[in-house]
Image (tube, rainbow, N blue to C red; front, top):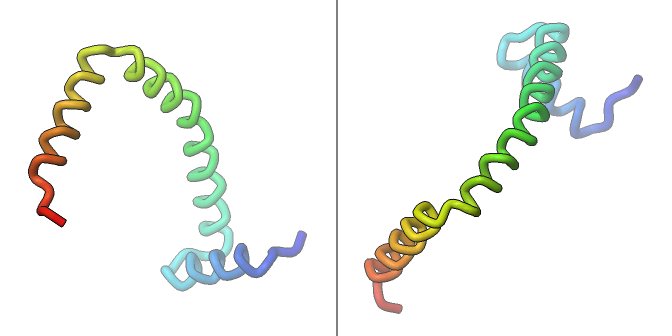
Length: 73
């Protein structure tokens, strides 16, 4: 399999950090797999927060506070 230019550049960057080609590929594979596994967990957390009225009220209060602290334009 051949790498496209973006993938080749990323691999060179990982190798420049001191990783061997095998270590760089292994690390990238593991990192990507972990990130993919977290996707459904994060979606579930977001869904739970969206239905949490107390969290929504606090979010709106913080947003209002931040808006009140904004410098005039």
